[in-house]
Image 1 (cartoon, rainbow, N blue to C red):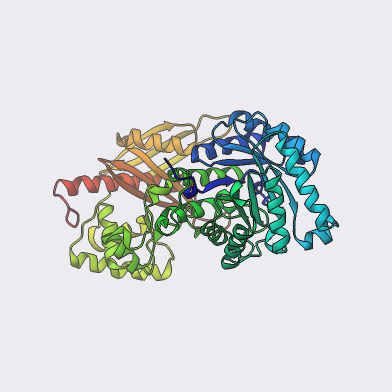
Image 2: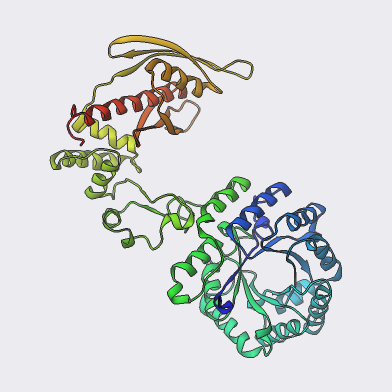
Length: 516
């Protein structure tokens, strides 16, 4: 049987505190969609919103309470009867409803915001908890701005609300003021000072104003807290909240240190992060821990060499453990010869030492001028220095007709081994029609794995760069094309990929050197 003392409960407040982040508001359908994903992720409690805030928020919380059956569903309420009644009305149909009520405990808030005495606030806190307990036995209380509160007064408040029936007491670092050692000491102090603390789960809710929300949360659990309030991607008020994915993976990766675990299904973390960015349009920075684009990328030559030999050298967790498919080696000026050789081999090219040496010299020259080197750049160097393949297919002419009242049609001429061939293609859009024409003329039908278009420079007159990746015989062939007309660039990229497949075919039959 699981030892409950070793379990850390994950309280996700993305739909409440997270939504308060500028630019992160969600409509009810989006909230429900994300709540379903949070259920799939395995969070223990979803704080669905602040029901008294608006009719829309109330309706959203109630809808989530009705439809999400796995996690507990919490509604936030200030420490007054109206808020609590409204919260209960919103969550009452949940399989496991929770009322989360709060009031400030710091002298700063009492003096300038509430304009009330400590005695008066303590009374209101107790009355609120008692009122909530009349609806449900699952009541959480938070003394807001706890980290800037007088410790003795905070202890008295925690003890009082537990006596009144609170089953979870949350200690918020509301303004992100604490540092890890200090916050851990505060949690330890409460466990020593509060006589009835064993009757409740101690939770923490840390903000990231000093960039310490995750560190503070981890310090708290090391000192007895067993619930962490957090958000996906760390979104939230001001600088945000503790990032749930970072907390969960820290506890999992360093379980030998913490001796704790969560119920999160970590393989769903990346998918959840991506869903949130799609809903809000707010993307995470590339170097964001766990879910950032660079989280499992490696550019240093030393790191790449170690990673190739043994992943444990520079990866403390696998990308698959959070739902990412694989690590990605970024080729740049810091990349070493071993990484280039390995990457070329993954692309299907096994070079001799002298061939690799020539490619590596040209690679370094290009890397000094261009920050990131893509497969297309590397293969261009390869062809120039080693391969110099012949082109079986060449684009001669392309004309595309498209619009909202026309069937997208592409008329094309190609040169195939010196002979002109032409045909027309149709599709759901101009690019689809262009690719259809190419497939007809070349009598090929390889699976399209990737298609991207990027502007080389800024401005409407920028040249477009297109990349096409086709699948052939379990391998991939990337084609690259550039042209001021993105449709022409796309056609060139597709044809370039076909030519590379032809080269692969010849090399497999022994007709080319440099690749085995």
